Structures are given as structure tokens and as C-alpha cells.
Length: 401
Image (cartoon, rainbow, N blue to C red; front, top):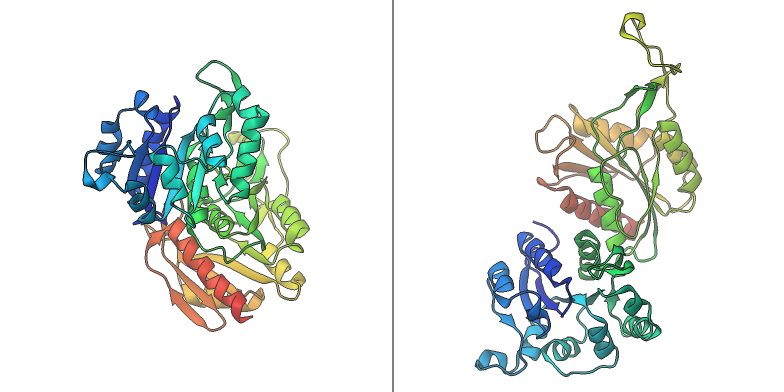
């Protein structure tokens, strides 16, 4: 289950070569159990058939304002009224112009006008020169003034052979904007600092000490906070994850680098979420050259890394909220309570790293939220859902502070 499950999405496709990408977007929405209905302009049907979207959604596709069926006679009212969100992808320059001027000359534009109060996500896609034209830019500005959520296109090689902005963005970018429109903005304008992933402590040019953290939980925390309106800075160790859209990401490698970046930015943050798995120790000496097996020492001398979370607890300003994560293999709640007290935290999120579905490198998690009032175990959820539940708890803590 995700934030899209059960949501009613009215997906509007216009006449662009990028319409073929819209089919993969619809498939992704259906896979997340969204309820999708598709409107196509006549021009869109020249690029992708109606049957494609009917097969993907299991629902009829709507094209004409006035069809033969009684179900289509007032479709522009019923379709928008029954939807949680409208998305127009791809949105051509012609469609942008019609929407910006409030025209209602086909089923798509009338449905959008009839959707007053519903979120509308617009994803432009066109030739670079068309996109850069002042008329198009003025229309995009007008749409934003009217409350439409515009997702900027990607830049790159276009179908016409030109290079520049105008490509339909990747699905991940559009998905983030859809989820942002669908969730409550209870962190609007708040400064949030999140850490994620492992650190690497260099042994020599070929080796390092690290751990199994994938960064998925921290990245989910950062994404969820941004969707809820927060201004998010993410300090990330070495991970294999794409930077989340709309989030400032600072990439670091070692614990010392993470310490410097977190302490430097901590004073500006209202909420700090330390989900990174920071190495407790680093080698006392780093080999300039690769250490050969034959000459390797029998033991490795280590020295302690700074405790970032404890330092944040000592430096915390009035009103600041600190959240720590604890990955434990035993005595989970007791360890969480120790960390809560010793490091002057407001909340500790603890999980069992020995579980097959709750440890490192998996997409699910089952955590217990431990604060000064008690412990709240959460069920097994996706890391995205877990992040949403954690933020629900954090928002409640802020409200009661």
C-alpha cells in the first residue's frame, strides 16, 4: 500500500509524441492501486490508441465531449467531480494556452474547469523553442497563478532531434508532485535536516570500513517531509539512490564529513532526523598505498568517530526537535530508551536489524517509536509508509511541545 492506493486519478493525455510515456505512468499508478480514468484529446489518439489505456486501467477511455452513451453526456462534470486529482501529461503548448485562457472547447478543458478546488498537475512536453517562447512561458506563469501545479520538463535530446528543455520528466518526479498535492501540508515552511545511508572509513585506496545501510529509510523520511511542505536538506552517505526531486542533497563519505555538514546546518533546522548509520570507529592510520595481503598487520588500530547525535543533543536550541534511529539486534526498547535519555532526544525510532523484512537493504520496515511518553509499535509497512507514520508522530510532538 502507498499514498496512491485508492486515489481516484483523472489522467488527461494530449497530442504529443511523449504520449507513449503516459502509458507507462498510467501503468505505474495502477500498479500502486490508484483508480485511474483516462481522457484523451483527438490528437492524442493519433499517437497512442484508446485501447492501450483501456487495457491498462480496466476503464473506458473518454475522448469526445458528446458521445453516443448517456454516460458521456455530462462526463466533464462527473469525471472531475469523482476524482481526487487531475494530471495532464503530456501537456502540449496548445493545451497550456487553452487552459491559461480558461477555454472550454473539448472534454479535457471542460473537465479541468469543472474541477475547481481539485489539485491539477500539469506536465509540459514540447519542442525546446516552443517551450522557451514567451507566449508559452506567460501561459505557464498564468497557470501557476491559477493554482495549477506545474512540473518542469527535463532537458535533453528530443524526438525532433533538438537538444534542450521540453522532455516529459521522469515518473519519479511527477509521482512526487502528485503525492505532494494529495497529502496534508502540516510541515509547511519548516526547516528539516535528515541524514541517511552509511559512512565509509577509508583503510587504503582499495578498502574501507562500512555497514549494510542502503539509505532507503532516510531517503523516505526526506521525501515524506518535502511532500508535507517542509524545506528539506538531506545529508547522505554513499548510497545507490537517485537524489529525491526538490530536495537539497549533500553527499558525504566519512563520519567526519557527515559531522561537519550536519553541525554546520543544524542551527537552521527545526527538526533533525538522524537516520544515517554512522560508523562508530575509523582506522587510526590510512594506507597511502594498497596494503598487500602478505604485509597486512595482524590487528587494526581504530579510533572513535564523533557522536553526531550526542553533539546535536548538547547544542540543541530551544524548540528544536531531535529524532534518532536505533538499529538493534536485541533489547530493542531498552536500547532506544537509553539513547533517548543519554543523547537528549525527543524520539527514537528503533527496528530489528535481524529480521528479514525489517533490516538493511529491504523496502519494508517494522519499527517502534519510543518517546518520553511511551512506546508505539508500528506494523510491517513499506519504508515510505513507515516514514509517513513517523512524521505523523513528529507533527503530534510539535503540536504538544
